[in-house]
Amino acid sequence: MMLTLGLFVFQLQTVPYQSLQRDVDYRWPANNRVGLRPLPQFLGVNEEKITLSGVLMPEITGGKLSLMTLNLMADEGKAWPLLEGSGTIYGMFVVNSVSETHTEFFSNGAPRKIEFTLTLTRVDESLTAMFGDMKAQADGLLNQAGGLTGQLGGLL
Image (tube, rainbow, N blue to C red; front, side, top):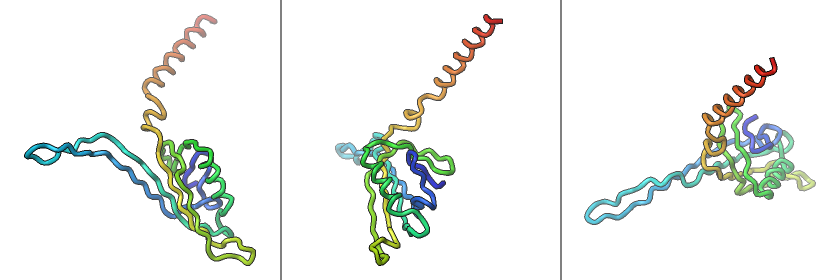
């Protein structure tokens, strides 16, 4: 497994991408000052985009059906978790665009080669917002465990 977007798995049999480009923009507007240089001020993260691109050879790799699945996911208009096979959690992403170029055709018109580009945009605030405060979750679990031990003590 190379990457997953929701339940869609990027691998040799589906859509093995050859490049993954991640772009994160930060907002630094400048405030003009009299007699001095403008003073930039950090306002936070702007947009995070991931672009996957590659070439599919339907005889060996995935093809039109795999790309159709990604198009159907985009049609739903939902955000999907993006996870790398190495364990990296990127966040929640929506599908912005799926671009395909079909070349080198069989006699029936089916492509031998499909070049694709998939553009994703992150829509969650942060991993902390996505998963919540881990300390608060751990404290809640400890409190529940303490309550269970009290209940078990009453039964004995």
